Length: 233
Image (tube, rainbow, N blue to C red; front, side, top):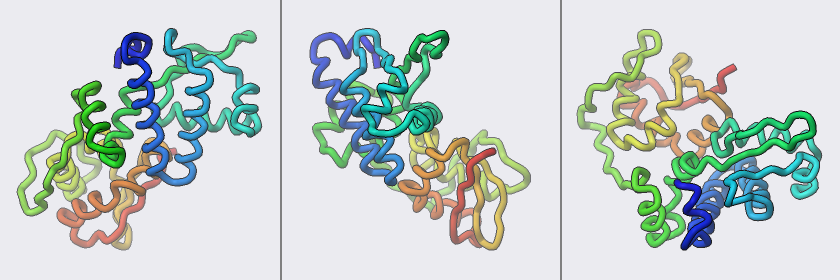
């Protein structure tokens, strides 16, 4: 997304669509994600400088807006940064307030699976603005041999590599944005244990994408009947 589009013609409708994408992303998630996105939307609608493409508000003022303490603000901002939804463009030093920028591309990637919940007109507008993130409906054939892949294999678990090939063949975009961030750890008592770089990714996959992940895993690892995703330490 070119930031200039948010200050030129049709900027208002583009902003509304972006905030709608953030809203459905939060509403489709667990309570913690709903809270995070609600707080972010309040901050963006009230204080985001669209011309400079950044928000510069002190933690004390954010805490007042969110009706929380400053420790909660620090924790929330860290969570949004780890998720890639926000990007820090300036650190707060010597009395200067830190500056953050919305990561439009990551917001699009994260919200894309939920565009259809808004309606076909919304899907069409978002697909036009972000042509490389057009929503696709893919029929998954688990009986079809997946294409070869260069996905690195952890240890000697060839079954996990085959699982990744199946997921990649079913939807390249979802695989790249979500499943590709997982790392194989072990299989214990029919439980496939994977690791994710942060809690946001782990919870999102378990909430929205676990079913497809389990089906693909069972195709390559028949003894697996459940999924566990741990956060890397």
